[in-house]
Amino acid sequence: MTLKPSRRLALAAAVSTALFAAPTTLLAAGFYLQEQGVSGLGRAYAGEAAIASDASTIYFNPAGMTRLERNEVQAGVYLLAPEAKVRRSSSTINGAPYEGRDGNNPYDPTPIPNLYWAEQYSERVWLGFGLSAPFGLKNEYNDDFFARYDSLESDLRVLNLQPSIAFDLTDRISIGGGLDLQYADATLRSATPDPGGPNPDTDGEFKLEGDNWDIGFNIGMLFDLGDDTRLGIHYRDGITHTLSGTATITEPAGGPVSVLPGQADLKLPDIASIGIRHRFNDRWTGLAQYTWFNWSNFDEIRIQLPQGNEQVLEQNYRNSYALAVGAEYEMNPRWTLRGGIQYDQTPTQTDGRSTRTPDGDRTWFSIGATLTSSDRFTFDFGYSYIHIGSEDLDVTRGFDSSGDGQADTFVNMQGTTSGHVHVLAAAMRYHF
Image (cartoon, rainbow, N blue to C red; front, side, top):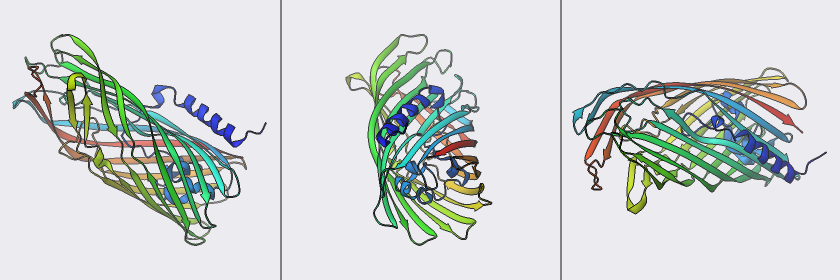
């Protein structure tokens, strides 16, 4: 039986929901996750806005659907194995030092799937659908972590459902865009100091849980500058989620537990990219990409509680960028090899860097391959090693110990962060 495009879209959405139903597949290490296409992973995401080599172009530039040779369904999975260390330099409460352990690796290996469907609707129009997890964070520290008053647990999951459409304006210019239907779910947990003295056995705890659906958009264009050179541009709207849920407050020293309604804004960045692809000859293709992130709108997490009470967690993110270059080599009709490097600037700064995202400047080293096994099936493979530079940590949190609504206990936590990530990925593409 042949499905019409609208029925295929509904089927893709249903399969996507099933793929992402289990929480264990959603808990991603990191905050922004570039891992949205396996072939792109192998070239460190160089030229993703321009290359349009498979259905993952729906995420990076939906205009690229018009350059696909055939209809395609793609399913991919990525295994992220991050490792980070947060080492203590000093920790004080109202100026008096207290002890605490370093933060050993707070991450677990995490699988992340995504799914894309692209189909030509008419001579100049393509339809597509994508499901991805573009933002995510999952880490958890020991109860005696020296920076437990900053964070003990962070769990953020963002799912993006993206119905898309693309048009050929001319033989050389295409435009495409889509809606970003996003679901965000977050849990933030941290300790609160015991007025009798900081002690993990008698500390209190603050825990916020909330979720939200919201909508944004993305749009891109593709320009064939010649037979061998292609330029792509893409913009993705930064969505602000108002996470609504509950705040659970456990008083220190075995005190009472209060469960209150609470909410907090999660401001995701606008993302703009420009990429280029140039074919040098029948075998070699060069790629490059510049991506800008409007992270400065993520300046704080403001948690609003009943009766006008609120807790503000300063983040102090700055705008950042990523620059990637890569190449592909067509070894024979069955095998294509690729590689790339990327510099990815951290948006975090020493003044405000949190142990929730112990990040630094990242350098990607990537390799990958594509196997065309038959007329219907293609397989992509990719691996990246991401070095995360060492950065300083200096964060201060204030607490109301007297209950008068004013912060009177201040905890300062200083240290260094460093880490790396291994990413291994595979995808299957079915052409029809």
